[in-house]
Amino acid sequence: PSKQRKDLNKDAHCYSYPHCPSLILVVSNQINHWQRRSGSNRMLRYQLFLSYLIALCVLWSSAKQPQHKQTIASFLSVSSSTADVLIDLAPLWVIIGLALYGIGSIALAMLTFASCPAALVELENDVNEAKVQLTKLGIQLS
Amino acid sequence: MVLYSVILPTYNERENLPLIVYFLDKTFNNAKLAYEIVVVDDSSPDGTLEVAKSLQSAFGESHITIVSRKGKLGLGSAYSAGLAKSKGGRIILMDADLSHHPKFIPEMVKVMDQNKVDIVSGTRYSKGGGVAGWDWKRKLTSRGANFLATFLLNPGASDLTGSFRLYERSAIEKILPKVRSIGYAFQMEILVHAKKENMKIGEVPITFVDRIYGESKLGASEIVLYLKGLLQLFFTT
Image 1 (cartoon, rainbow over the protein chains, first blue to last red):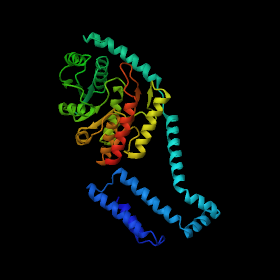
Image 2: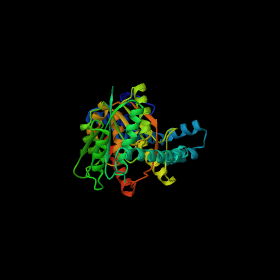
Image 3: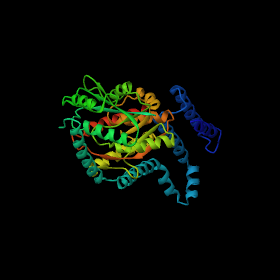
Image 4: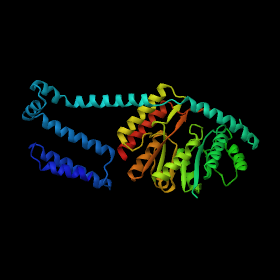
């Protein structure tokens, strides 16, 4: 959080996006306020997500400016119409990206999620041994 | 020598309790570790308490302590009640239904000793771990739930809903009073609070065997409860 504060404060004095400083200052002040209210240096999880969301919205808002769209188009070596589609629909690309990340993560997790039928066999053998020993100790079993 | 306290909340575990106690006794004796088992029974109608008393006679009161509670009061309070009665410097929380095999306990102890961690969590998802008796739908539910919890909460462990863990007493005493969730979210909340307290968490791969006796507890209501608990943790931690 202290690093975030520093970066945000630094960005507040950075004039690459001249229309943004006031909005970034508002965001950083709000984050500082939340941290003071929570009584710790650590943001709550939803506050962290919210701060990322707000930062992304600020970036998107800035990218949508015509002069910045041209810069992005030339940086990516795409036409301005393609840059329009990429930038104007950026939230959709983010959602699609997150969904693909989620599906991919779960798919990989399923592939690596081991089945251990031998563990059941081993347990059943252990149970049979245990029943014999417990009966010797006088424990009544169902 | 460190005394290990195993807290076993029970509800209708008449068939499983003698077996898990036998496995625990065998494991701790083979590993030459001092242990006690605290059985916390919530007035099981199937006579689990009577079985616990006969086990106490057979294995000795120094090894088995019984906490009998009036009514089904929930897992969190069962752990708290067991913790209050326990004397060990390290606490093991696990299920009494044979889904967790005590044979992994010595490995957990080794990880705790060598890596100086506060909590060792048994994980089904790492290499060497796994499950037996789950179909692909159950596995998908488990993995999906775990992914969602990791994405939203990031508590620094691979298996967030697992309930087979070894704790330093100081760690669990600090965390348990803060936990408010019920159901599967209960286990997640423990790790979330552990991370907030900058506790170190180690992991040991375990195999989880679906219940061989008794009923498994995963229905739509459990899933809804889990999602509610997850959202609550997201907004409050």
